[in-house]
Image (cartoon, rainbow, N blue to C red; front, side, top):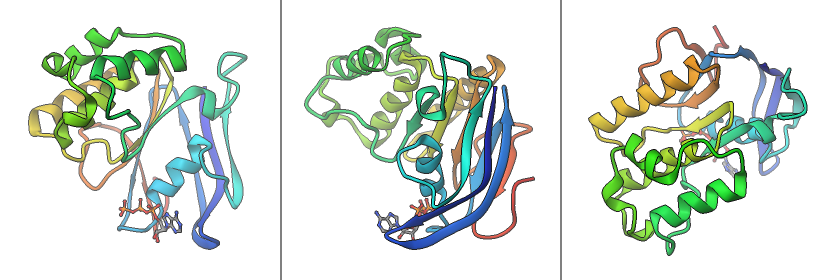
Length: 204
Ligand SMILES: Nc1ncnc2c1ncn2[C@@H]1O[C@H](COP(=O)(O)OP(=O)(O)OP(=O)(O)O)[C@@H](O)[C@H]1O
């Protein structure tokens, strides 16, 4: 499987944000996207996920077969809003996500163990702290299998132990043949990752 972006361009509100972005990632590869505030990292991830149209170029998933015909079907997009319902409990949110997305992977209980948060299972998501919300959103990556993880500042709000646990989860996903694109301002602890610098430079 290969995730291939070719000469992608994106705009917001009719204004160009970036152009000429190309990369190719095979199974087990990670791309770290860096760049100053407003350089278009979140916009790029949303375009790759199929949540926004590209204003130029293309992004494709090659070799996904009938199971993963395009990037949208094959990806988890972890955005800054966590995509959880505040009035539902943590477990209800995770089970809803699993039922909605299909291809169950870990149970809600197992996923919460992975982020070391079993204690919040029966609390409404809206009661949680910023870092706890992020950790539950990370658990959301684990309740349904998707080969491509698109992560927007995934460690924002995480304490050091949670950062380390999440790095181990990302490494396990890559070892299992997954693909990761992560926008970040801080190192994520993934050795051998490719790098794309927005607003200047290119992928290397
Ligand atoms: N809905 C929108 N309408 C108009 N402009 C937008 C919209 N969303 C983002 N922008 C603009 O698009 C540009 C790129 O924003 P984006 O969020 O992709 O940057 P970023 O690199 O992720 O920034 P940060 O490091 O601050 O998270 C910014 O100038 C921003 O103001």
